[in-house]
Image 1 (cartoon, rainbow, N blue to C red):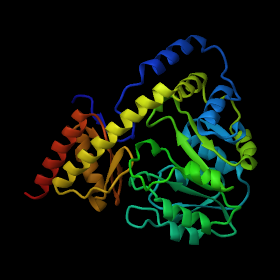
Image 2: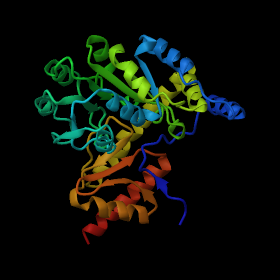
Image 3: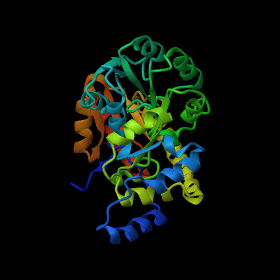
Length: 334
């Protein structure tokens, strides 16, 4: 079999930008040197880009690794609240932080923010809100987020995980940085792995209230991200790179709409998505669908009993997956 199309990891289908690749190649000549443990260049670049204090910026080994450090740093309260069908790493992050997860059932494909607000108690260490949500693709809207934040006590940190923020094209989806600037308990989590195409380098960042930053920085203060990741991520904030990434993300959003409409036209249920992937709520058929896709040369992410997540890939991969899906549906009706 030819190498399969990997549509399971939510990676960008685009190769690294030439100027970013050049920086990594040049820095590879300095692999004998430790990285800057203070991440000064990247911290400063992010602070300027987002108009925040450098003291509010945390850098870590991808947004998931950084979230692990942050959850560990917040103290002894025993519970962390998050949606039940959300980022698959959340339960492990919660356990590793010595807490227990309070998993709130979804409202269809979306976070049930009213129920999540009801789940916050005196035992709540923090809340995770993933928007757009992985794996369902749904994004939280402005009014519902504001209503939710109004209900959460001011001493409970709310981490808004925006790993897929760059792919959003719905104007009613807020920029979490606005909530950060308006409130003292909002933390914003983002990554360079997805839209910026640095998945192999593992670098993410969080913008958090200064009162919470130092403890998290101490948990993660062991020479990472690596020097190549720091240099590449800082270069991603240059205006010409940002402009090209925005163009690429718009292209992916257009491909997402076309891909979703095509699959829906075949008779599959496709959840509305604001990310770079689609969610097919196949229920009990999810695992079997994923296995047949693998046999046909397509890797997808199955959550048994719930559904399948399919990354928007190259035009070739998307067209090939459509053909597989058409065959799958035909075989089910024979």
